[in-house]
Length: 451
Image 1 (cartoon, one colour):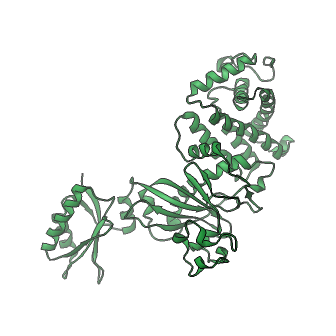
Image 2: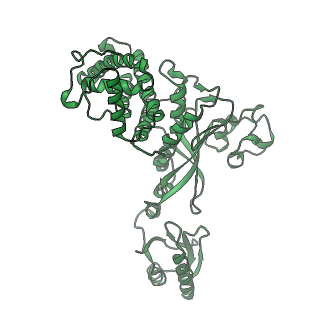
């Protein structure tokens, strides 16, 4: 199959360009050498791009139709496309489906202070530049980001003094360093502006935010939600999402990409999170899973639960926050088709795994919370209409979900069958009969529990 290429015709004093997608194979490189020789024999000046993704050429008497015929003759291994509308869009389509590894730096607003570099799984979180305390010259990324003359030799330089939208301004924030794969199409936006980069920025900042989910899991809860760091890349003083991207591809330059915030995007306007120690080894394992490096369905469910819990802080409605936590606990515990009392028993047993004394407490709390869940889902009631305090319900449900996440990662289960066997055996050890969906018992009149 021929490689697709876009032809941009010569105009006035601007040379023509022939641009193709991913870098050439060794065979195509040899074909390029031969094609350039053939084109030059037709009295064209031609030179390959140093990145290897196209050529520039011109002719003293350039004529579009004859140039296209000449190119088709000389470049038989290419399918040449002349865009009828947007050249940028046509070039972007050449890279659709191309997987590009991207290294990034994403600022983290409202993550305020900690004693040293945080390294969690595949992520690093670098401390910001602080005038008189941590000068710009000591920042590991200052050579890439410091575009303010003289700032590297001034120990009192304040990155907050750098203009918004500059690379140097990023040094005022903690920076999340990570890597992810993106579709090449996103790295070739149509036109120039924040809207064109929106999908790329959202994907990059979402991947970076996964490591903040680990910090939220370890340090944030609904007793003090105002200590929660903002979503990665969301900068309250910019009004934009931002990321510095460094593609692992010779034909794609590194650059700062920004996009407007979401229409309903929550920001923490309070102090934010301070950390007094490194989160530890278990957090590194969680971060690896959060980054998408999962080995089995249990880790996959734990990753989803970490994400849903982290995102729940930014939902604008308390009822939606609560339902997000309830649904995540079901999924993380691999409840599957269990309903009624069987479902409540399963989640309580899962959340208390390794801690027998917590089982009955979790069960009674979860049964009560599920009644509230049913009132919200089936009757459309608010917490106020249910006559209960939202904060109290969020704290209790959040505790159960966190216990489920910890158990999923700590116990080392790998399959749904292993989880079912472990939970059934645990319930039997408590004297609770195994309940299947077909033998479900109403939770109000079900068997008494002798624990």
